[in-house]
Length: 100
Image (cartoon, rainbow, N blue to C red; front, side, top):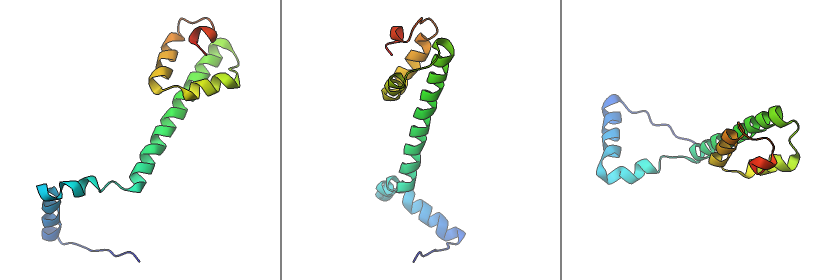
């Protein structure tokens, strides 16, 4: 059963002041919930997938079909590595030249 406490303005201000005090600084850090952590992980995964999809689309436009093993390599790259491949793609003449 969940409980809800409604604070009046004076109580809310006192509570916020208490949480802002030095004694409760650690409490603020603990306000991050499992939901917040899961959402951040989901956003990071979504960003990774988007980067991979865009890079594969660019590679296919320039070189044609991208083999499944190359797609796997792209998925294993870091974000910085994917960005570098995207830059190198401008001058590359093959997937092999890109290390893919």
